[in-house]
Image (cartoon, rainbow, N blue to C red):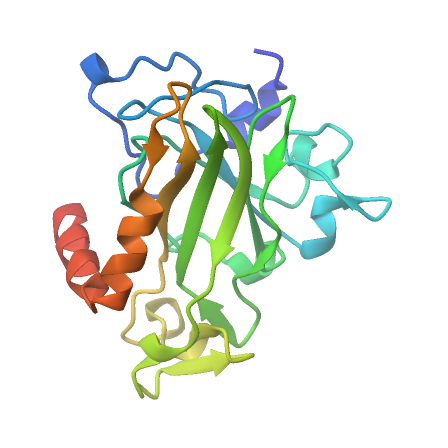
Length: 235
């Protein structure tokens, strides 16, 4: 692989890595910093990087964490996780915070994949010394099988549900007060979870529908049930 060894070693899974069944996975590209064209019902590898907001920029331009012009590419002040979900299925990805303090790493997160197109999301706030956002929604957008964008979706603070353990930040994010987390002596698990979906078209021009399906779940108030069922399978 062309990716440097130290970055490969850092790209570890914090809690779990979702694999597809081997006999269904025809995508032979496992390195998130390499390009691949996908089709429905096969695996796709992408990465998550946790660092400071400014770590993702060089001379005012945001670059992919796969770009060796960024210090984080060489392992400076960043933590990486790699996931391989099945294309066009709704997945709930988890990053354990048991041995990880997102605020200490800089408090921001970027999703990324690919080399030529170097697709990357905008940096999104995760944590500071007071609050941590634990639930995220990410859409991978493809054009004829090539990843062209990664979108963080925000749904406001409805999921705070009036619970005093949660705080609405900027009318966009439902965050947990870190004093309520188990690591701080509280009672709440504060693992990061990412609801992952797909949109666009695969290399066979099949439409990827899982983002549309997740949106319907939200509109029909079925998302909590989906999360509960998924978490019960993970635990």
